[in-house]
Image (cartoon, rainbow, N blue to C red; front, side, top):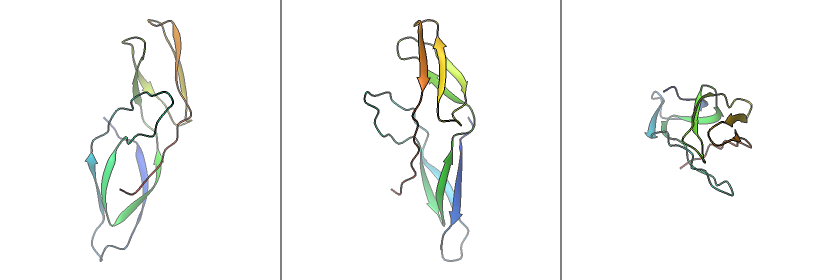
Length: 103
């Protein structure tokens, strides 16, 4: 699995090298109505700070009303639409917002 890109900037860290490691593995977004803010991934950063998140790469989704799996989803435009033939309905991911927060 290829993770989306994050941009970072160096911070003062006592002249040592900076690093970022995944502290909590990527977690699937759980559908909620109304939508709720959820942590997707957590990093441990030493000597740098993430400044931007880019959702490039391919994402996966599963139908809510059927077992249909969708792959190759491109979220760079902030939305995605398709049709779930098993459920007989349009499916979508939209109104995406990414936030980088300090723990």
